Amino acid sequence: MDSMFWNRQVETLERTALETLQLERLRLRIANALRTPLYQKRLFRAGITVPEDIRSLEDVRKIPFTVKDDLRQSYPKGLLAVDMKQVVRVHSSSGTTGIPTVIFYTQGDLDRWTELLARGIVASGATAGDVFQNMMSYGLFTGGLGLHYGAERVGLTVIPVGGGNTQRQLQIMKDFQTTSLHITPSYLLHIHGRMAEFGINLSDLSLKRAYMGAEPHSEPTRQKLQELYKMDIFNCYGLSEMNGPGVAFECHCKADPHVWEDAYIVEIVDPATGEPLPDGEIGEAIFTNLIREALPLLRYRTRDLAFIHPEPCACGRTHRRLSRIQGRTDDMLIINGVNVFPSQIEEVLMSIPEVGNNYMIHLTSRNGLDRLTVQVELYQKLFTGDLSQIDTLKGTIKDRLRASITINAHIELHEPGALPVFEGKAKRVVDERERL
Image 1 (cartoon, rainbow, N blue to C red):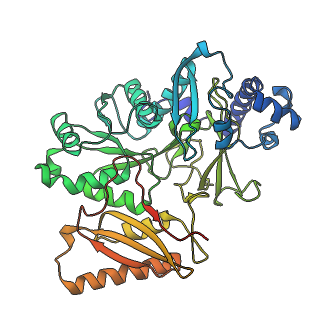
Image 2 (image 1 turned 180 degrees about the vertical axis):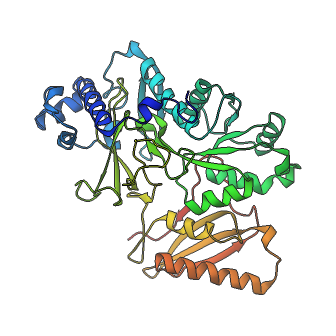
Image 3 (image 1 turned 90 degrees about the vertical axis):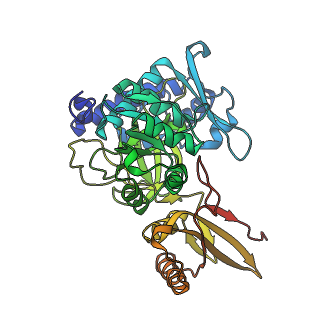
């Protein structure tokens, strides 16, 4: 390990060498994919019958997109490209259809994934002297085990506490001098609001950093958490279909996550046409996994909206950076004809100091018109209870939301702890509109 590099040689590869490595690994994954009925059929139709038909990285565009329904329709083993005897682990995530998406891993797949997580953890400044409290759920969900193994490989002391039980989480942080957390942003906000209840002060803790995963969050949310906890917050991007967390990871510069491009090809495309977009322009992120042999996924449509930073990072890594998620093609809200992403609302709310740690977006309709209600908890330390202050704060929130999303929202202010708490992924939107 070299200071804040886990593998300096790979992390600073010159772009031509990196792209050559990507092409070599893409051909290997094509060979894997051709062993599965679905990919064999699709690749043959696209004129790809052997890996060498991919002559350059640009040829990746000849490969048809893969979507989540392909995994569901191939359940349970239709996309498995190796003998089941080689599979050492299975992860899955359930969907709204009730048919889960299943990902298989060989031991080599797990080793390569672990290396990526170790790379990201070291890039944040963590070392073998740190104590890592993993507050993500374990089990079929990929979030817990991914960073667990990465942290162990770096040499951190790992506490696999899992999710929930706020009092216990805080006591463990205090007793074992936890320095690093893996947690959702909504739960970290919630924990801060309950510290006093359990007699824990910030001075009792030894926190230095937290890795945020599972939920997209805005830069104002990061800044708010950094101010509340006096520690660094790092964004970790991942999705189960690509292995789990660690597809991209922020370095110490905290200027958006580096996509580990020796392991993934990332494309940004127009979500409507599928055509490629230039760096700096927002579109749908498409990923091809270059390091997994058990279950290859080619040009997977994430539905995440983001852009690639055109400029290099100050840290010296050559792997390009993916912006924080700007929204999703499938969670966009259409309110009286206006396209709104929940992330836009969060960004406004978290930039207002008087807003507390929790909020909900409630949609109803009457006589054909949509009504947007934003329920917000107050930050008790900055609120005196003066009625005029309530009216002023409502007006501030309303005005800033209207400036951002062009919609007049009804604002409800609530006491801290009044809104539902989510220890896993937060469900921020309740849509009760009448359907025609």
